[in-house]
Image (tube, rainbow, N blue to C red; front, side, top):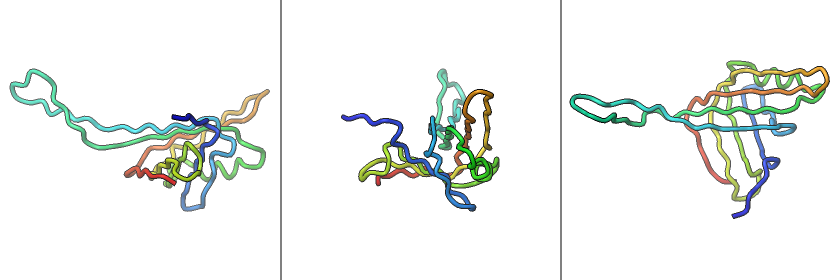
Length: 135
């Protein structure tokens, strides 16, 4: 099986104010699915018994902010903004994976370094089901 490089990523944040391409100068992206586990142990049980409850997820991304784009990033990634994150780790070619889910932005974090480039990071909390498919 052939591998692929991270630079192929296509990443979009779609919200009421429009769509912002977050893959332009990105450095990292991660999506972490999770589930809530409930303990249903009762009575004379001698071992824990657990069941799966709710599915959940979180995403995080970061990159370099180019001159003139701070307002666009700041507006789109404001904490509390609700939108849809669409990620395509292998790019947009036919037959490649894409994931989509509703998310809530936890806010734009900006790291300005005296003798380096200004970087941004943002995290999102999933708010609904994830859909998966191929292009």
